[in-house]
Image (cartoon, rainbow, N blue to C red):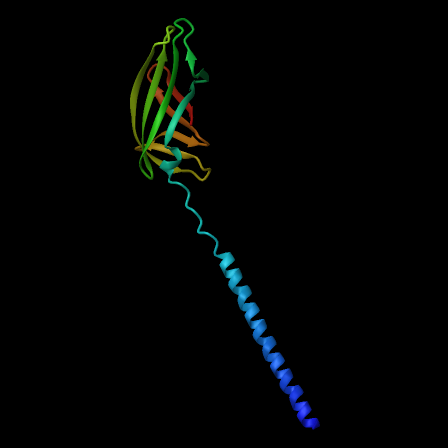
Length: 167
């Protein structure tokens, strides 16, 4: 009878160890499954295209000519005419945009007139700093960063200048 009792205890211990082994295996499997699901987070979203980052309407802030600044809106000291302006940038492709500049003139009586100029197309390139440069051919014509666009140009009378604009 002692053998039967010992055999029963051994059988119960084997069943207990098999049960524990199965439970541990299922717990480990559950944990691995949970961690694998958690580590498969949502796919990282791609940043917007360069064109999507610069597209929009930019308002004139100031022009810089060899250390001299004109702050916009600018009021002419003798005529009282107020000058302001915008640059409208539109997307052509992910790396190409076109731009149009609109000057607005308001005389002393409040009459508004506008003059627009097509600035043409530009190809965009991003620098490691995050700045986005705009090129027409090999000539850099603008730099965009933090909702600011700085256009560079040259005037026969005034020389090199920079037009600073903000979105």
